[in-house]
Length: 158
Image (cartoon, rainbow, N blue to C red):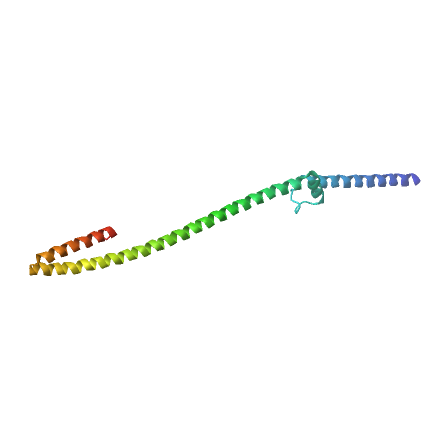
């Protein structure tokens, strides 16, 4: 019986050793799989990967790379903002110029209209002077009409 107990003990020790070895093998598989799935992102990596990332400098390199990307984006955004501000100033300047030109055009149109009214009045007087046979007055009125029409043409009315 003691021989049988010895064999059972040996078998029990062997099973225990086998279980420990199987556990160690499983742990190495788990650790190896963790090591192969390290993302490089400390927010996502587990403790083993984080330790490896810190000691290898991987996190530091990734942080430097991301800092560079952020700085580039900031520089581009700043340049775009500056260009947008310049475009806005140009647009405001163009609007002011357009308003000024519109105002000048309206004033010019009023001036042309006034000159055309004067021409119409002088043409009525010219008709009366011709009908009455006043040649000196007719010549004077024709000269005035000619001058006003020239002024209208210079203002762009004809």
